[in-house]
Length: 459
Image 1 (tube, one colour):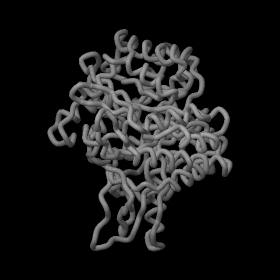
Image 2: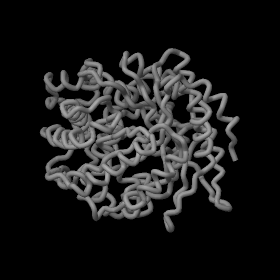
Image 3: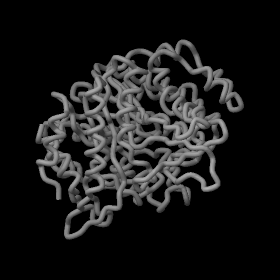
């Protein structure tokens, strides 16, 4: 098992005030679906075959019923902050009247964190849209930003006095392209035109939500994007990797920076949409400054020319997720890889941070998710996940490399605090630093939890 001295040299590389935390998301851990309204993930999970092992929302990690002990566990790790998401249908079922029962749960969560001297970092939207909103178009509804602003107002008025850091959205690329352009995630539309429109309307919701939060007194308002480095292994596919970079990274950063929508994207996607839903007024609102940007980084996208051998499998690495991609390339993650098929390439963490800082200058950055799924084994009450420790050590080192190069990175959140429902992969993939026995719900900190705890304490 790991010992503190292994973490100490890395701890010395982290800047003063650097935040170390762990992250989760509501639908993945909470359970207690009887205590909230329905979401698109409940509807998606009801369709046989959508979730690999048939997992549904209950019991997940039964976090709603185990809140106090989970907070005690978090405290025992000595981390500075906890990034969690609020379930929109738990606090506003049907996107209508506020639920006092739902609000009370997050009241107790936030107060419990503060009592344990842990900073709450709240994400408004981590993919669990109320089903009633999907019934009227979901993220393609022109009025969706108004519904989101109402939701943001509710949370801001309730929690702005106690929450230190706010994120409007988590990974809008995933919401739009895995959920709308393809059928990989909820709501599973498989419509590229809808995916492109949803991408834009998610950002209009971010803008309206940020205004609403600030009006309610919230400080430190930002958003979270899943950004990465697109690698071309051959000059013949440079233009394909560039297009992947455009839709994965630059689209979102261009909107936040006020550069609007790239003409290349408009040209490449004209078979799907004419982008007539875009308005100059909304573009101006989206570009209003944010206080910080979160980056969820896991793996690069490596593009090679098409070969008869075919590319290696990896979750979420498919050109159907990039409508308008030129022909002639394929995704080809290299070894070593995680159980998601994702290439382990910490150097791309550094380049992603550097690219982001140049594309959205002057905005403090946080790594809001980073981690890996590995074949954990519980032996004699312990999980000695050295592969995950290696992943964390190399990637936090890569963050330190970016800091050394002048990038303003102020924190790192490990994904995830505990094993949970890995969306369409169900319970088949474990990302947690805490092992969860899904039969008994027993929590067992892994060796990786000891490593991160030692890192936090060695600063």
